[in-house]
Length: 153
Image (tube, rainbow, N blue to C red):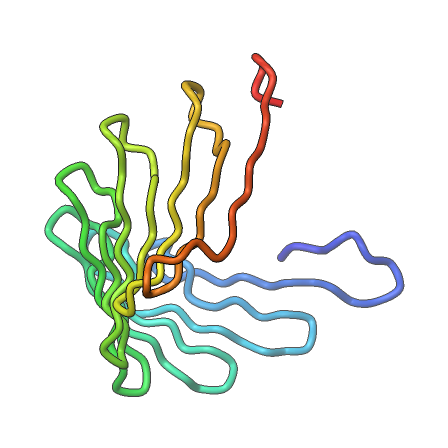
């Protein structure tokens, strides 16, 4: 059980665990219960059912990375590079989100199946000094610049 900082309202959250020590339920102050179940041998949750009874199933790669989620017959799939960075998300309606990284394994781009994209410019410390948003035709629709001092502030 965990109690939040509020004194004017009950903000207690109650946790329960299964025989293997895996989180089994989370109940908020209103009595809404989320259930976690179908854990695999590595302790990864296989199903989460929310307080409304909607279940989401989870699948994993051999390396233990999330490979897919399915809820109400709709599946989202995840792909990774060889170091475990997310490279793609296939959405249930057929869309795709792609993530790009530089040689230092820092996120430098995000794009969707329609051709919309966000590019990031990074300094030597990895701070995002620039952001360029482009529409499907490649037209720059928004640009943002940031300045950091030597301490990254």
